[in-house]
Image (cartoon, rainbow, N blue to C red):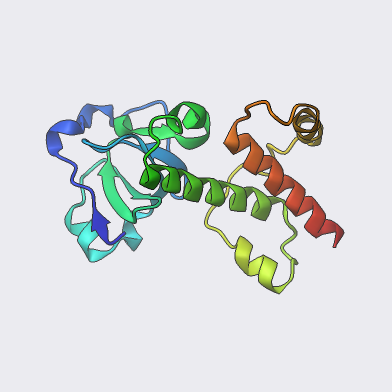
Length: 183
């Protein structure tokens, strides 16, 4: 949260704060800053913001720390999209190396959250410290063993078919949590 992406007042409509989407601290999102493509980020609690971030604070905006380039912005809800819902369209926006790196970092975080949520809190040492996270909501409740088996089966039967990378890292994290539970 030490760098700042310049967001200009005219690019952030203030009337959009009454959106149907309610975001929470630690949510993974796509944020839009003028002059940049939609970028993966995470919503942070403004109370833990750096002094620099606090100086740029905008009312009725979310503090988003962006993956890959370690920048932040105060985004109005109109400049935010849910990460999972829009992943497949957003990841195709750019082939720039820094964008690909940011998406990869966001995927690592999404995978870590799935694995952490499905892992036993008694997991020992190195694995436990690797899995520590902020607030995680609904990851365990969305686990469907049948869907996981079907996804892995479809990958095995058609290894050259294109698949959604977010679905893949989620499945990999679920399998990792399963194998950790088995010792």
